[in-house]
Image (cartoon, rainbow, N blue to C red; front, side, top):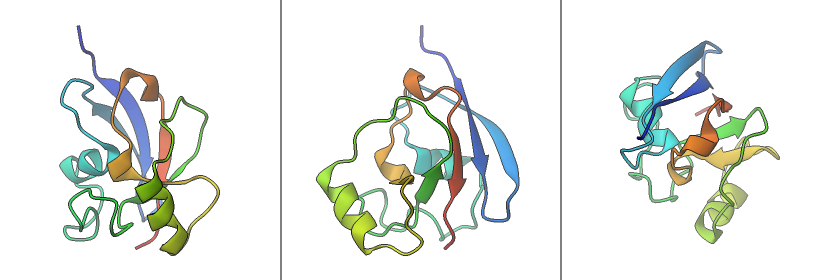
Length: 109
């Protein structure tokens, strides 16, 4: 039986939101941020989740079982601004049971 997981997202104003994320809808972190309206309209997921704009860049703040970065994500992060060691593209992180307890921060615009 699929179950929602809890993810803590710090928005661009520094406010932390604890949200419930469904594991049975094939959603990703970018879509979750949009669903909860944690970033202004038109500032996240501009490319629609194709790993082509880095508007959904986030920083992973804790240790959870993350999927490996694919080549498209690596390439986009190599060109993006505000990149850190823990940077990921939210559109490339699909919500699974393994991400329960994930804490992340949205990168600046």
